[in-house]
Length: 433
Figure: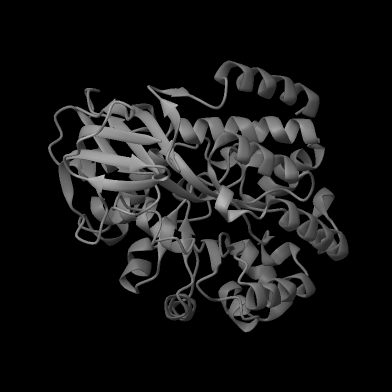
């Protein structure tokens, strides 16, 4: 299929961060040309007059299994939130309710311009999330969650052997990067994972190159528990296992020591910043400006709907930029650096910067169109400023993922929104939460 996006303001995010007015031609699943294009009658045309054309947004940390818990775990600190609400609710999931939760989360994120996610599943039924992702057309990285240390895993405990059997089954069936599905190892955090399973992750990563996705240093109480058990800080402990490298994605990193920051930067270990979740759970303020100064790769994620409570990447983007200014001054984390976190840095975190994160000829066609006719955007001359400080997911009009139109004129082309919402409401009743 050929697709021409005509006469838009194209925020390329290429190395020069060029912004051009013109056309973008897609052939198959790749960007063929940026600039004026002559096309034949078989080419589908989208008029992008008065629209921003941007790379597909990459949310590098999500929890689709928690979408149905939105508004049911408010005003709690991390461990109360997990023990009293999240873990018991995740434990209640059936295959049916988990499918409903995943569909609702994907519907929301895709309507708001997200084309790629790194997701952490729960301990059981994770095949339903992969199935939902395949149906939606999103580019999905994820897998089952490891919680094999019984003392700290509550009702979600799953033995090491059971967890690894699930890994084998899911990876064999769903690891199909050419189809947009990639299996990732997901030890939830050191607190609830045995040394055995963390060592397994390190070994599998070393042999097969499998990515590892883990929360770390989100909360001070968490750090105390890890230190009591390992005699090390979180990131120091991961380093001792051989898990600090470009294929381990560390989420949160609110409370890193100077030594840990240096280790992450030197090892090129990417960090995912989730500012809304850090604020809502009273975890603290991640000093992202300091991390970027040390040349760390920092991406963005909404985290789960139960600790955000929205999956709108633009809200996360704006908050990330604003939070650094009281900490480091008004010039800290300017709009361009913030927008990088949601695009090219997200691609770098997943090792896909040669394919995603910018609009360049030859790259995969993950593209989002933003309607500039809303009063909040109509008069902003600087496109990147408009995207970071003035835009919301509601301004997204069209989403193309891997060359396929997923959202057209704000209507999802894969999901019936009314049916997805109805199933989600019924699933909440089944969960009895």
